[in-house]
Amino acid sequence: MADDLSTRGLLLTVVEVSSLLTLNVLSLMGNTLVCASVYKNARLRTTTNLYIIALAVSDLISAVFVMPIGTAVLIAGKWDFGGITCQLHAFFSLFVIYVSPVTMGLTAVNRYVRMCKTDQQYRKLFSAAKSRALLTSVWSFVACYTLVPRLLGLQAYAFVPGYAQCSIAHLSESGKMIHYGIVVTLFFLLPLMATIICYTKVAKRIRRHKVGACLTIQRRERNVSISAHEIKVSKSLFAVVFAFMICWIPFWVIVILRRFRIVAKMPRNFELLCMFLLYFSNTINPFIYAGMNQLFKREFRKMLFCEKRHKVDVSLGVVHESR
Image (cartoon, rainbow, N blue to C red; front, top):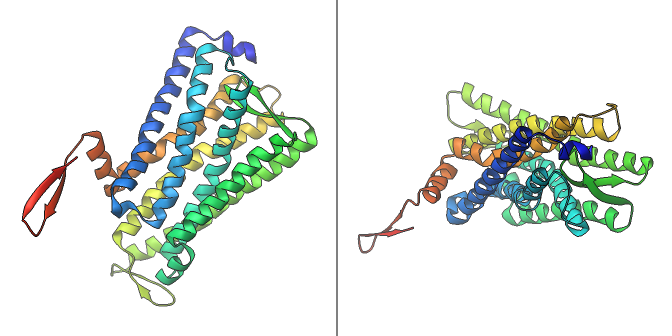
């Protein structure tokens, strides 16, 4: 397998490197724009957007710590960055693989409660403080699960040429079975099922809203109107989930086929596709936000084209311009 990297033709090398480099630049730029937009525009500092920011940060971790080294490996055709870098590269890669689906699942639950429950229930369950505490707790748990088995010597990290990056090297078959039983269940299947169930219920609520003559959604406990903005946010997150599933379901299928040797010899191109699906998932979300959320779209445009902001001083009747 190592020879597959070093014996690639020039054309294949150029295609792989240019593709990953493009994804890296777009992911870095797009997710930075998402974070900057929320920082600059107070209207974007909603509880739901805390989860969007968390997704953007996980994607930035990949864009900063994982993709650049993967690009360098594809250029060099081998791992030439030392053992410590390999350990760090594997940790950040695995952390992103585990934490992204979990964060997506939390985002889906947030949308479900916002759209299908009362405002009082939503504020009780998803206040800004509780959301920050929940995200911090979940991310800390994922980081500990990723790091502790390695520190205890239950797992090792090694370079995997097919992935063009460092990843887990299992020390025993039983350990591998236990690991993937936990990972696939906690960090993929449960978030996936939560996402599907929550967005199915949200979709039904939106459909009921469209069928009705009024512009409000009747809740069981009391009448509460859900704004058109909330529906647009939900629709943009539908698109994010759809893209997420397109990338992550094939990703885990390839991982399981490879790790358990269900396929006798996994072609290198399929193994590399596994990582490219992950990188594409890290890249696509900001473009969905820009295409479907007018507030994000406006902020992106202001930052990309250096458009001036206009602030009106009502007392003096003066318009101030600032960048």
